[in-house]
Image (cartoon, one colour):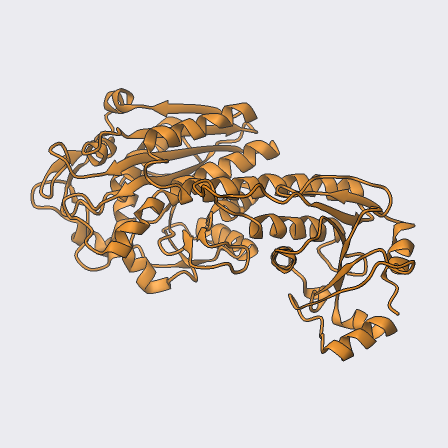
Length: 503
């Protein structure tokens, strides 16, 4: 018989326990949890061969311990094993295990235990030797558990209270593990916040209610400023005002500043079209307009990132600007052919009222550069359908003239697997934005994603700038990887990683 409790007892002699859970009850213990009914044991292929009991089980059950592969069974409690359920979770070659792959293990464990009767779970990764270290391994596993356990059930009338479980993590590096767990718990909260905001329907999230959510970050020590309609008019931000003019719910510009250092700030700018009808260039496909509750996913990603950094008390100086408006049809709405004046004084001929995201972000970019003098600016937006045609949901598009900034963001994307692919943005495309009656037109004539990025570049002077087009990345059609069906929170992990590692 494979005596799992005997192995756990030996490990406990040199290890202590820490626990983490956003959706799980936190409990710390210096000994094996006496009420644990389930054991999740991480194993690698070489450990299968080194342990006769594990090798016998793996051959009998055809279990290779490849990354993400599982083997579970029910066993009666006995003097030899206190666990009623055992889940073997394969790591693959543990010498090549990355933080992201560790988080995927947590997601796999969460989905494997979904619907089970397990109340107290003992997770044992002590047999795994990996270059990322035990603290990072365990923290990333818990991060994956939290992200894969996310649900949005606010509007279900028959919703059941969440099942409260205890997750115990065995660690020989308790202090380091607890510190890293807290950092990644804050990141999980940031992703969940972005998902919540993006999942909300338009009658739940609109400029005013989004701004109220942002004000909650004051409790974490962030400075939050909300520019209402009068303040936007005073600041001369005519582009965002034009887009929001057709709605009874007026636009807002939300500014969240986390000043964790005295270095010149980084600026994050998010598109926050809380619903996009297309305006008088009305969207006519039912499935397309239904997804437009997610047209504020960029702003949600910025707010989720700012929440993460404030909760972590990160030693960085970052300002996040969220340009919020509803693009509606009414007797006040802006029209195709109108000429509007942006905050920097440039005039814009409206060729298409459904190219509204770049308008609100143009004012936000100008405002950020003018008022905060950032050392770099990155915007994030569900901006163009042409980006989806080029990259689908496999990559977000990155557009920039700054090679160093592209390299930094691309590296952050690789580490978090919120991957970026560089697309062109060159001045040879500028003639496409030339207007007969104004300084600019708000759409190009051929290269949709690239000319949209180039349009935004016209509202930045000398600051290093990158545009991230996340159209196609904001929603998931199913549960896979760290994502759950619905909003993904795409960009929070990427932007947090970039901010914390930026030069």
